[in-house]
Length: 362
Image (cartoon, rainbow, N blue to C red; front, side, top):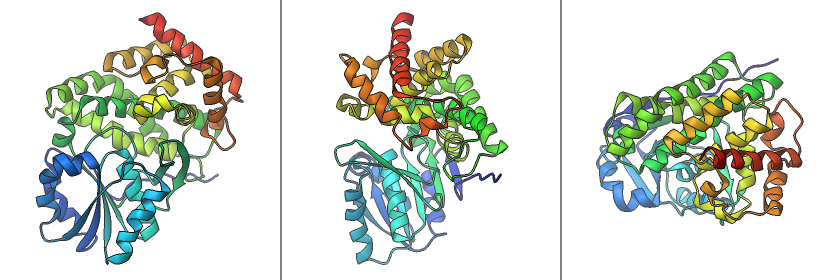
């Protein structure tokens, strides 16, 4: 049996870390393309531009808004016209995933500079590809992780609080999915089984969320950097990134993918839907009442969804929920990494009871 653990090449985090951008980028060459999130392009670019152009040349292109094959092909046309040494993804999760896919297509090293801590995408060698309309299409498994991930926690602290909370929702799934994969000897994203390092980091991710989540929420709501915020940014990004990729995915992310078949969920962030997928998975896998209570308490405390209405499904029908369940269980989905056999009827029931428990607690 082969264990494989996957890491980014370099991880830099801290207040004003963006001021080291030119120094860090120069490791990979003198010229690059920056795929820039539309909001960052319009509102935050002056905070980054001086440090992107200090001794190096970059071409800054505004991201089209969806990590789709069409957008990747559009950006690839720019690279074919210039001689770039690296690709930078500056912004949120879909911008980041697009930059990673673009670097793979162009055979260039990838640098990721998130402006939010809303998912575990930055460190991974995975891009989630969507349709142009926002529906889940496939996972694109990349041959290597980003060369560099640089997190400026001052920028993250000034971003809307909802992003940090969504990142905690994504990170919340990490240990539960890792534990399922560990029990089943299911493969991680490399196709091998996880290592004790990966499983340990996944568990530490969950423990960090419970310990520092509320304090980090308060810091971000205030717009300041504190040790608790630093811990949660690291949990959302590095611990969860290594945890999901090197330990494996299971029900929570498959249920997220299933939820995307319903258009009202498209207004909600990845981590918000993953959080609801995690709650659903607790009932699906027969977790203890103590664990269920602990996870609901955490979600309620930091502001994560606990009902279907919280992710836009106020008037959802049973027929629509069955479509979610069927999509969650399709062949090749990670829900089959659970140590129990799973079918759509089981997922449908778990979706319903997770919603009922969220309502009961209110």
